[in-house]
Structures are given as C-alpha cells and as structure tokens.
Image (cartoon, rainbow, N blue to C red; front, top):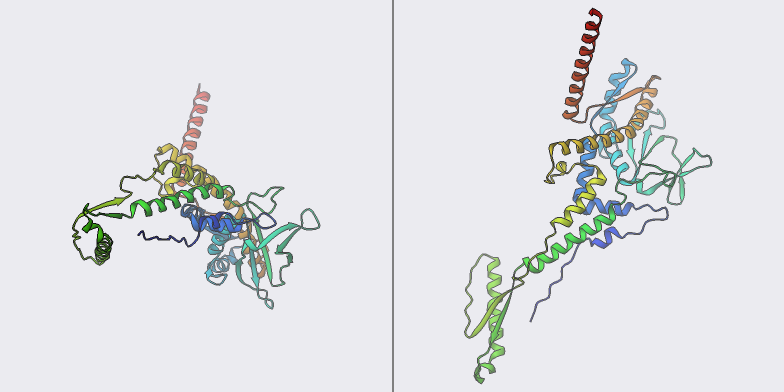
Length: 373
C-alpha cells in the first residue's frame, strides 16, 4: 500500500500572476504579488530607494534655515513615520510600484500649521483629465475625490504618455517573465520532493513452497510495521535495525533519476528582470562574470536612472518645504540639494576637474610660448 501525500502551497503561483486588471488596466494586484513572490525584484526596489541618496533643504532666507531643518527632521509621516526623508522613501516606493504616487500635506484647520504628511495607497486612486486639457481629477473607484480644506494633494507620475497619462509602473513587462521563473522554482521544489526526499520500496517475495505463500499476507504486514517503526524511530535519533526472513528487497525510489539543470534558464530570466530594473547584478549578490569596465558602465547606467528619480522627487519636496516657509512668513522658497550618489562619483568629478585644470594650464603655457616667439 502506498501512502499518498498532498503538498499544499500557501499562495499558488497562478493566483499571483493571473489577476484580472480593473477597468482602467491597472495591474496593482499583480505588481504587489510580484514583489512578494520574487525576492530579487523587491531587493531591486530597496536598492533603488536607498541609492537615490540623501538630500538637504536650504532656505533662500537664511534666518528660516533652522526652522526648516527642524521641520524636515521632525515632521510626522503617516501613523508610524517621521522626517521628510521617510516621506521621500515611501513616495518613491509607490511611484516605482504603481507608476504614480499621491501624497497629502495635512494642516491644522484652525491654525493652518502643517501637522504632517501622508502617502496614499495609489492602487485605490486614478488620475483623469478634467474639463480642461490641463485639469486633472482624482478618482477613487467611481467617485471623484476632492481634497479637503485642511489638506493639499501632491501627485507625480512615472514615464507618462498620451495613452497612459497617469504613469506606467517600472515593473511593466515583468509579469510574463516572472511567471515563467516562478514556474521553474515550483517545479524544482516538486522534483526535490519526489527525488530529493528519499523514499523506499520494500518488496517481499514468498518462497516457492505452498507454506510460505499461505502466510505471505501476514508476513508482509509484519515487515511493513517493522519498517515503519524503524523510520519513525529515526526521526527521534534512535537507530533500529531491520531484520527480515526470506527474500526481501529494498530499493530507493528515484535514486537513478537526476534533477534537471535549471541554471541557464533561471539566469536568462533574471537577466531580463535586472535589465528592466537597471540595477547592476553585483549589487544584488549575483556573481555573474563581469569585467571591471562592464561594472563601471552598469554603475553609470544606474546613476542616470537615479538622477531621473531625483528629478521627479525634487518638485514634490520643494513644494512641501515652500508651503512650510510660507506659513512661517517667508516668500523666498527653498532649494533641494542632493548629495553625490557614491564615492565613485566624487572620484570621477575630482579626476575630471584635475584633467580640466591640466588642460587649461597647458593652453596658457602654449599661448605664452607663442607670444614670446
């Protein structure tokens, strides 16, 4: 008798990637499922958000600088966050995942002092064109969402186009590749469950005489009970020998089979995912053979992507700080200053200044030599 065993998956692969989009084509459920099911995608998002870098806010009127710094450091964000940097991280995360981000500046209705900031769930909101070509309307479900008197809405889109004016997620195009990748991983798990988890086939052959065949059923049941008892004892660290009389054969089921090599297809799929997200493989712990020059070029590509995300965040951060300064009595506004992305950038800038200075000194020397001649 063969014991049947069912393997249950807490979250089937098909349910992750085959969600039907809503009436506007939003695949927010699929994107959330991708980040939950494929760790490398979620790791790419974390790297992008952290590598976007830190920023400082400088008030154009120096006497308001200290108040502005205190506001950026202590402003409340949602129910669990604090500081303008936290808001920027949450805002960028929503922008990358859904292709758009919606935030709110919440003010006290009586004093109109900024109480805090909030990042809305972008999967619940859509942006549509209003009556005019430049008017936008925020829609929640089928109803138009109007801002309250004590709040101000912030809105940013990623890669907008005439067909997709409300932005496109950075993960667009990944569900198909990720579905194949997760199918491969699921098959690997099933193969290990069948082949890697060793199971045994115990065969008892009765002797040719009739006396042995008369008690074949009873002896088979005794062998099965003794074998099961030995297997159960092994789980507790107790070793029991299996002793049988007669022709008893024991074989390992699936010992002659080999697991399919999935290194090449998995790497090809991961290359597609990494290329879409523009994150160098070495930042994700993927030990692919790359030259030093190739790694430098990949870092340059990532730098250009991060600069693009900074350009999207800067107007939103400036609008928040300008609103705070206006409430403080300043009309000069502020400016957002981003730090260098990494030390390699600083080294490259220093080398570039050195080369320019050397070239300028050589030109002056040549001009002086020509005048003397």
